[in-house]
Image (tube, rainbow, N blue to C red; front, side, top):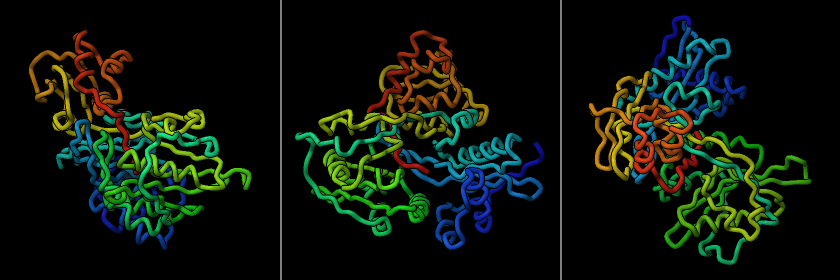
Length: 400
């Protein structure tokens, strides 16, 4: 690799970073008339650029958020996005230098967690990110999906156009129950970014807002497309969050009553979301795919471990972290404390594997059985399973 200089980009350099990132995804740049608003999706001082002889050849950015961890505590997290390398500089270490610089900065600012959505699964494990969630995609045959008599009733639904709903949605989302592990805050920069995407959609974007006795308690953002002409219309749900059981049922009651629609499609949904249990014909809800959701990185291992709820006895973990070597060491993890220790390690694992176990998605015993954790004490995987267990399934539900 030639000498690559990494530095934080100034405000007047963000447009070029945006262009480079979008070109790396083979997407057209933001239009001139849209840039004055789109630039506000970039949090100041959070965009890095990689330069080769003065030319921008790579970029990565983040914005400040919080994530709920098992037990309900909301922990600071850097939401990493906008990662791209110019095609003539790939596989030359540019991404490695960007990731190392970004993680070092997060560690210096004492941010315990970082999260991202991986465009390709093999990329980010070497930087300590692990697949921390599992999600599924669904297709619902609308005409067959009849709600059961016992489904919760109550509340009202108001239908808004996206431009009108945008004023209300940040407050509604912030007021919802976010006790499930994996749910994250949505700061202003996120809303600006999603607004830029949805305002340029080719079909009208509508928002159904459910209100219960205490006011708005859920919403669904959707649009309708006709992939086969007028023969078949598909309602695509881009975003759905419900703070109560009644809101969840009420939003689905509304979606199933939208006329001139054959199918309803959703992606990146929680594995345990009980859509099929709402209807009389459970086969009307078809799982069309599963995959990884958010990838997580423990930037500060002891702080992150101490922040989440733990039950059971104790286990000593030897963590290996070549990217952030300050994390490397042996930790005593119990229900009462997390601290470095001189005790012999019972389990040895890399930082990315620890991230996979952190939210409870992957049991340590499963990770050990597949060779991701080295077992030094045969009793330790079961003890670690109890410490890291979490219910319900972790889910983020916010793409960035």
